[in-house]
Image (cartoon, rainbow, N blue to C red; front, side, top):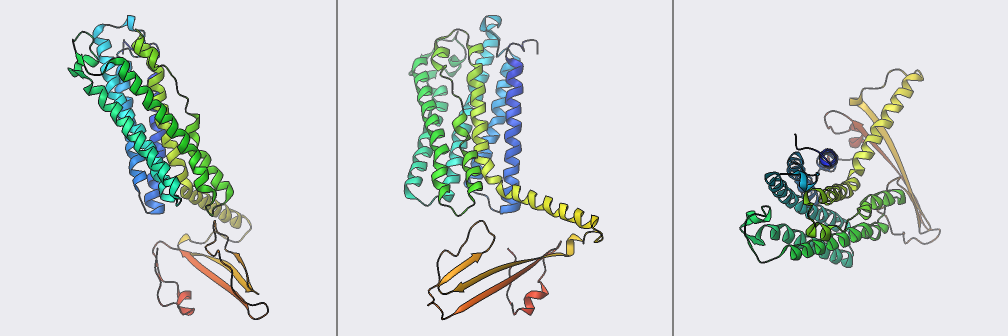
Length: 362
């Protein structure tokens, strides 16, 4: 702790705050997928893996900060400098892998809802380019020099097939590809969601949340870091922005999936409010939740070949019109749907009265 100073405290607080935020959103996403949607996809596995990568990244950088990361190199001993660089290299490996899988998760989520071929091809290209470049960057940091200890220990003689300048160029290329991927993954959801049968307000909310990646600020300091002599101080900004990029990408991939959880919370809040109002009006205490029933009425009519539908849903599954001659047939269907919230599922007696023999709980 005696070596903690400079930007060290800011590094630790920022990293663990972002890690906590990412973990909270990941838990909410998994709860929504497992308990409400009852389906888990590849995008969920990828974003969970990305979130887990934040933990070793934050741990490694925290250990480096405790040894003097964030202070000027002139204030550190050689042993502390070696420890800091080694911890940074190990930590950024997890960070780079996490960034790749987080963007892959966003692409996988969009692939689940798009049906347009060129949308799919764009997502495949983004997925391949980001994954390849990030994994190569993470790998080359370990194999470009022999022995590997020479990467963080400047006193060891080494034989490198890729110079520090070449690795900096590779890192710049990875940064450009990642920035381009952020732009594509921020713009493409607007095209994909535009034609979906969904309320415009919800389209805007989902697309906007996935476009947060546009606000990731990137610093072009790699050239200065590679040629500088104050590595432990100048790399702080790069480390923090890597963590911020990963956290923002996780939020972009997670917020759209929380819509069912948000609607469930609103529904429960509305029920609680109605029960309290009913009790105040003198209707007696609210009914037991195990026997509370609700009726929903939907009316659809066909008159002269036109069909008017009001299903009070986010989207209509009846997109066609009837082919009925004018004046021949007038048909009105009134459908009553009754359901009861009980601790254990049962067969409503009202269904048997309507002649329903087969029913299924879904």
